[in-house]
Image (cartoon, rainbow, N blue to C red; front, side, top):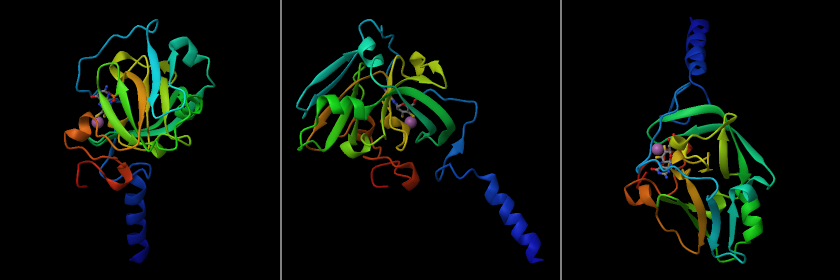
Length: 203
Ligand SMILES: Nc1nc2c(c(=O)[nH]1)N[C@H]1C(S)=C(S)[C@@H](COP(=O)(O)O)O[C@H]1N2
Ligand SMILES: [Mo]
């Protein structure tokens, strides 16, 4: 009965949300907390974000200065290498494009290292944090990011696995070469594209 067969496969395809990359499941209401270091309590009165390295204008913003920049929202999905994804989230903050427009990357800049107030680092090609692909975010789903999820502010690079989204982010350093960060030195993939399942070095 060809009709029945088509119907069966049609339903089983529909059951898997097309927004889920291969090997990922939908965590739904759960938002797992994952990090290597102890959760810091950062005071927004002393919080800063810096863009340094290969830029014409090394720049530092305070919490108030960041909030005076044009706001930018990400609405979409996030994907952790440990196989959970969360679909249809909303993050508010500023676009990394806005910060780079002020700091003005030199032509020699090809990569960035994002660094956190805790010492955590993660590396990214410059092209993965430009053209509307990355944010410094302080609200998630309309509420201030909790300290566990990286508050007061975290990097958000949602098209890559979530370890690239450094919690408690303190800045970006622009480089003319790739410099592996914390998880990348510990076996995780250099780039981490969830649609290509780039989980570990060699994937
Ligand atoms: N500072 C810092 N940021 C980090 C990490 C970390 O260990 N330290 N882990 C990364 C990993 S592996 C993931 S999956 C996400 C988890 O974010 P969440 O706890 O908000 O879900 O944070 C990323 N950012
Ligand atoms: Mo992760």
